[in-house]
Length: 247
Image 1: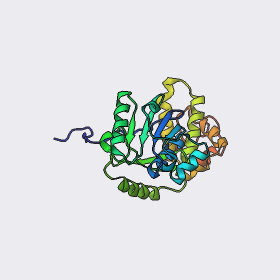
Image 2 (image 1 turned 30 degrees about the vertical axis):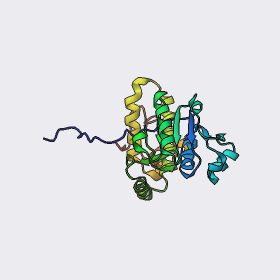
Image 3 (image 1 turned 90 degrees about the vertical axis):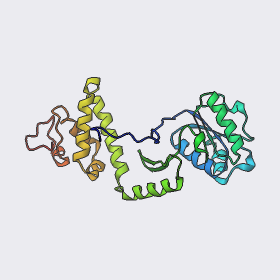
Image 4 (image 1 turned 60 degrees about the vertical axis):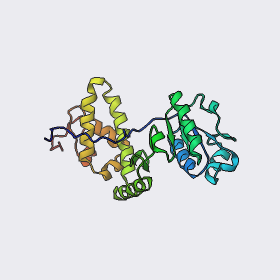
C-alpha cells in the first residue's frame, strides 16, 4: 500500500553543497583527472596541495603550479602528506597505491575520493553546470560519469540564459531583507515573502531589479505583499499602494 509520504529509494547519495573555503585539500596525481578536480576545488576557494613527480604533470596542472595557484610537492605521495589535510583526492593509475592512501585516510578520518574506484570513495564528483552563483550537479553515484555529463548538458541547454544573473539579484535582495528583519522569529515570514517574489516576478524582472528597486520593494515586506516591478517603480512606500497586489 502506497503511503502518504515519499517512498524511500535506497542506493542514493546525499547531495550536498560542501563549503571547503580555506580548507586544505590534498590532490595526489597530476594528470587530466587531477586537473579537473583542481579546477573544481579552486573554484570553491579551497587551499590546494598537489603531490606528484614533475614528469607526471599535464600541461594544465603544470600551469596551476607555475602560476602559484596551488602548493606543489615534486615527488610521490608519503603518509606525512596527510598531516593537516581536510580532504584527499587521488587521481593516479596505481590502484594499489590509491587503496593504501584511502586506508590511511580512513584511519585519520579524512574524507577521500579515489578516482575510478567507487567503493573507496567517501563522496563522488558529479557533472556540474555553473552560471555565476548557480550550480547544478548531476550524479550517477559512480555508475556513469560520461552519462552524467550528457544529462548535465541537456539540463543546461534548457535553462534561461539569464538565470545566473537572476540568482545573483535575489541573493542581494535576501541580504538586504535580513537587515530589515534581522530577528530569528522573522525567519518564516522572510522565507515566505522571498518565495512570493521569486514566484511572481519573471526572471527578466529579477535580472532587471536595481538596488533602488530592492529598497522600494522592501517597503512592502511589513504588510507581506509583493507588488509588480511596475508598481515598485511608482515609488509607493511602505505598502501604501492601494491597488491590487499579486498575492
